[in-house]
Amino acid sequence: MGAGTALTLGGAAVGRGETPIEPLGRLDVEGAKEAVVGEDGTVFLAVTDGFAVVDVSDPSSPTLRHENRSVLADRDGGPLDGIYDVKVDGDRLVVTGPANGGSSFAASVVYDVSDPAAPERVSVHETDFFNHNCDIGDGVVALCGNDGDRNPLVTVDAETGEELGRWSVVDAEPGWAGVPFGPWQLHDVTLADGMAYLAYWDAGTWLVDVSEPSTPALVGRVRGEPVEKYTEMASDEASEATFQPPGNDHYAAPNDDGTLVCISAEAWDIEPEEEDVRPGSLYLYDVSDPSKPTELAEISAPRTTDEGYGGIWTTSHNFEIRGETLVSSWYRGGVRVYDIADPTTPILLASWRNDEETSFWTAQHATEEFFIASSRGEPESGEAADAATAALYTFPLPDAAVTDPPTNATATPTPGSPPPDATATPTQTPGSPPDATATPTDAPTPPDDSTPTDTATPGQPGFGAAATLAALGVGAWRLLHE
Image 1 (spheres, rainbow, N blue to C red):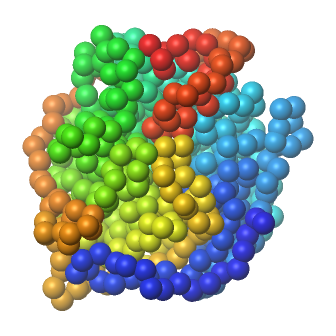
Image 2 (image 1 turned 180 degrees about the vertical axis):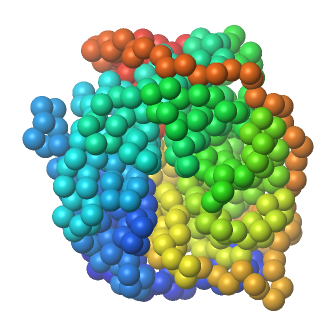
C-alpha cells in the first residue's frame, strides 16, 4: 500500500521542561525518506522506489495528491530505484537515485511541478555514480559525484540535463585522493544564493561559489580533519573513523542570510568503553567571514541506552533553519525545535520522541505555525529498530516567547533511563581555509563494470552497507577496503 489514512496522534513522551508538542497529523507513505516543502506548502517525498506529493494545507489531515513509483521505467535499465532524496526549487523538482549503488542505472530527473498533482518530466541526467543526495537552485542541479576517485560536486543544467562543471576537495587538498573512500565521501550538498555547502564527512564542510556553475570556485572551509591524519591509515582504522567523531560532516545548510551555517555530524559510539564518544551532534558556525569561520555552539544528540551503530540511533540527521528557529530530526531520538536567536546559546523549545515507532529522517518548516517531519519505515543495516510504517508527520511550532525558556542543562537521569542532553557549548575559532581556487576537472573514467562479491562488511555510514557501493566498480571498492 503506497499511502494510508491521515490521523491525529497523541500520548508520546516529550523532553524535559520545554513546551510540550505532539503530532497534529500523520499520513502513512510506504518507503518515505527525505521530505521537502515547496513554495506553496506542498510536500514532496522521496519514497525509495519513486516520489510522492502531499497536501498539508490542513496539517491535521495530510492528503496524498500524486505518487510515481515507476520513475524512468521507459529507459533501458529503468525504473530508477533507491530514491532517498528529492529537492524542490520553485516549480522544479529533482529526483535522484540510487542512493547506495548496487544498480547499473543511476540518474537525476527534473520535473515541472507547477501543477503538483500532475508532475511533467523536464530532463534526465544519467550518471556513472550513485546519487545519495542532491539539490536544485537557480536552474542548476547539484549532485554528489561519489566515484571513489575525486568524489566531486557535479553541476547540471536543470532544463537540458547537460553537465556544466565539477569541483572536488582534491582540487584544494590532493592528498584526499589517496585516502579510503569513507572518510571523504561527499555526503550531501545544499545550494543557497549561489553558494554550495558541501558536507565531505571527515574532510569537513566546504563553501564553493557556484554562481558560475561551469567554473565552481572555493570560498572557504568551515571545518575538517587534516588529510595527513588519514593518508597512512589502515582500512580498519579508516572504517572506525568513518563511524565515529571527530568529523562525520553529514549535512550542512545556512540560515536565511548565509551568515550562519549548521552542520550535522552523523556518528555513533562503536567503542562503548570510551566514555567521551557520543552520537553525532549539530554544530553552529558563524561564516559571516568565510575565511575565518567561528564555531559558536554544539547541540548534543538525545541520549539513549545503546548508542552504538547496532543500537538505538539518535545521531543527528537533517534539519532546517528559518528565521531564528531550527527544526531538526534525530532518527529514533525524534524531532526537536530550537531557538537560535543567540546562536552561541541554543534554547530547546520543544521535542517529541517515540523511539519504538519512529525514526525521523528530516524536519522542515511548512508555515509559521507548523513543521513537517518524515519517519522512515525501515532501519539502516546497523540499526536495531522495529520501526513502524513510514509516514509524514506534521507538528506545531512552539511560541518562541516562552515565559521561562529552558536550556539544555545537564541533569541527573532516572535509573534505567537514557542520559540527559549536554549543555550547548561555545567553542573556539578553527583554522582558516587553505588558499585554493577551484578549477573544473575532466569527467572521471567510467567505473569498471565488474561487481565484487557481497561480503559481511558492516554498514557504511551515510550510504548503507558498503557492499551496495558495488556500482562504483572494482577501483572504488578497493578504496573502501584498503
